[in-house]
Image (cartoon, rainbow, N blue to C red; front, side, top):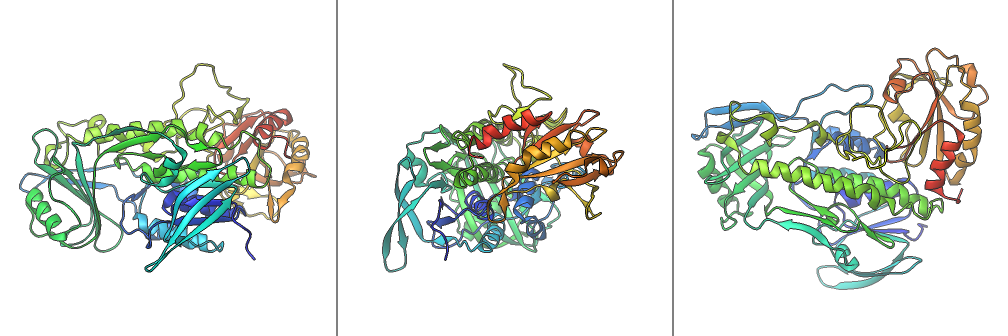
Length: 565
């Protein structure tokens, strides 16, 4: 018999599905509802950035993502006649996987495929998306949230009262959660700017590149771009319209007619519109990411331009940040202030995401298709060239009140680059890098740090000194945290990382796993030199602490677990 839900997730897009999956994997009883009576069709958010690929790896869904996705970066712009090539270029550099970043390139996959994969994995935990169930109101108190939902069928509507400990609103920009909480949606809507996004089946189209026609900006006639998706015929059409009065909707003949007029091509045929929508730039963020026991994630918390491919990715990372914190609260192992750090950590990142995507939008307004030439447009002004920071590997939360860094303490008044930290020495709050070529002492098998990290517990990496003396007292201190707090689950797992020059018997008697850094990748990635350090990696793949010993460990875990452990 299943347990009553502790968490109600409202909305079954990527953010809601990621939150529900992470909670289910952590043993938290969860229920997820969706207002629509059918799963959403259409590609919409198609670019999965490397940071989100790492999150998907921790969820166990990455192989399925790669099986349906592809990496494509070639672009082609046409001259006014629609057939002569004006320019070809690569929108981003294809990078080789490295020991610290095994998934360095964006993956192109339609959003409905991503959602289907997440739903499939969610069902493995006996959690099914409940379609046709609408949140109509909510009330909360110190102990929980009472939600009124209505189940819609073809013939009737049935009310239901649901009581949960926490609620996650992932119901989009028009959803009720944000409104019920009275949160402000601060920002702007650009009424005079118009776009069309459409998911089409296309014939007679060379699928080797993202292709652009027409002009945009002041005096332009409008522009269109066709981006091939994985498969044989599916494409995304992005149209720039100087006026939203232009009749462009899901009527396939009208889309075809307007495309032909701009592109000067009559050979490319649209055979079906899977999904189409007019869009005005709506750039907004809530003034608070939570109220009491109710949290907002994804489009319920922030909306933006699709330029740069940041929205879906930021939404999944909202979920990744929040889910492990709710998990600890559910297990009664969270400090009183832990849940509030979801807002503290995510709000500055989302604000910068909106800034970046809006700058790309502004560049895009004035350059598309034949107006672009290599001779007149530099990389800084080109909206089609993707900066490395868009891969989000440098996104960090160094300012968070729960991270602890004894190696590089924060400087008071220092301005944080929340989006672009990739160079320099690793600090607490940064993404935890991978390291390959590690040898498990007990099994004599090869592993990686990503293969050892857990989405259900903290991972304590003990980088041993030359004599290994740092490890034993730390492992003894970690023993209470390593005890099970629920079936098959502990708060902490510990791993001793030995340099290749240190004999494993130096740490004999320890209870943690021992790995030999045979190729030195772990010591390099975590900038460990002669002095031993302890690095604590959170369940969301963020470095929570870099400390020298037991006192630093206690300081970090007191901020996360409080006095509950």
